[in-house]
Image: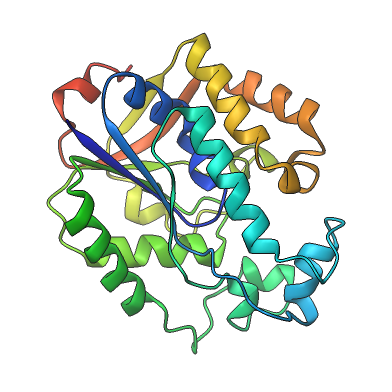
Length: 251
């Protein structure tokens, strides 16, 4: 059975950006592993880190990341894929990034997480033996997305990678910030279209992240509208050569 590994920075990124592709591959008999990197719970969060949950109506007594991991499991079921994997790394607000603007600015000099990510990704790939990897381009410039790209490009995987365009950052601004644009500019564009069943699976998966819908989209109705505008396609840049079954999906 061929295998695909989707490396999601946060608990929603893979479903938002390549959920249709994951649903299609699962339906075609691929073993799909959706692994989220920054999912570690932090006891008694303070300051900006705490505000990142209270501004979504979640009190300080709630284990925010545990709630989000449960949402991730629901999203995986909606896509028809295996139970998701959750790596224990802490999100940027727990690594010293102290405001929303800092999340989309330069990497902190003391944020030395890349070597740990490299080790974790290597172990995950050795275990899952993927024939294809899906990962972000860091469109929008969120520091966690950038760190995932930096870690993955450090590893000589020999495995083809479809680098997704990070939704919904792609639709928030006419010209979203792309700090790694030059890194991907020479790679060929790949467009994968998916049918109504996969579109419905993607919507259900995205809607499973209920704690994020107001913040990201203004609610489920706006989510549906944004996905409709995407037209049942997902766009990538490609490193390496696609496996034949995936190449047949590319428009």
